[in-house]
Length: 113
Image 1 (cartoon, helix red, strand yellow):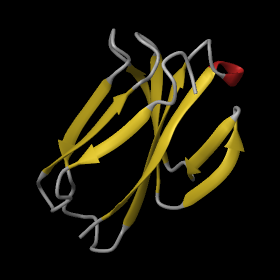
Image 2: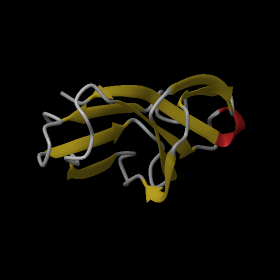
Image 3: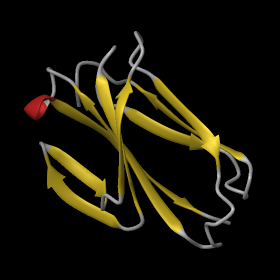
């Protein structure tokens, strides 16, 4: 948890190839650097006072929350992801009020239809 409590990450979209998928982070520290961790397998590893949910395959850095502590990311779900593929997402946010100065969101498990 951080200055605004535990950040919450939610996803929306059908995950059908070529459709828009959105990740929305809320409850994070305002105007704070953030990273999105993406992986194909779960890690559930203790990390910086929280739990790292995905095994990192891709880390998107250079993100930042807005003045309300929110961040929205949208993109097209790729057609190359086979049916039944699981992808894990989690946001980590710099937050001076959190343990080790970093707050983590919940993890999301998305399964391609």
